[in-house]
Image 1 (tube, rainbow, N blue to C red):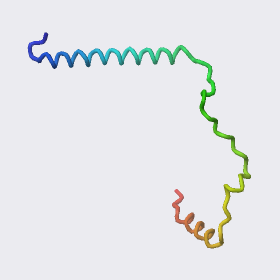
Image 2: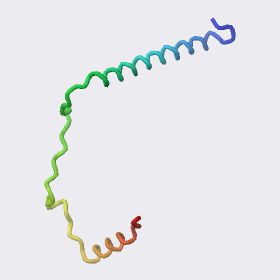
Image 3: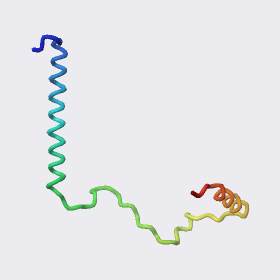
Image 4: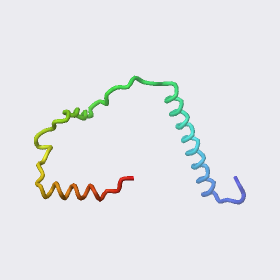
Length: 84
């Protein structure tokens, strides 16, 4: 027992020391596994895959025809973007 701290402080210090040791051991184990064990990459089980892009021509619902006023407004907006 340390004479300058209370029993509750000693218990807290012991808990912190044990947690730090467990963390260091876990970190060492994780680094050891990542350094020496390289499992083959595999597709994640149960996760949906992202569909491939369809090329330059998309689905008809993915494009919108702009009116002349909308095209001019968009062109004006693009001109306001600073190009550095």
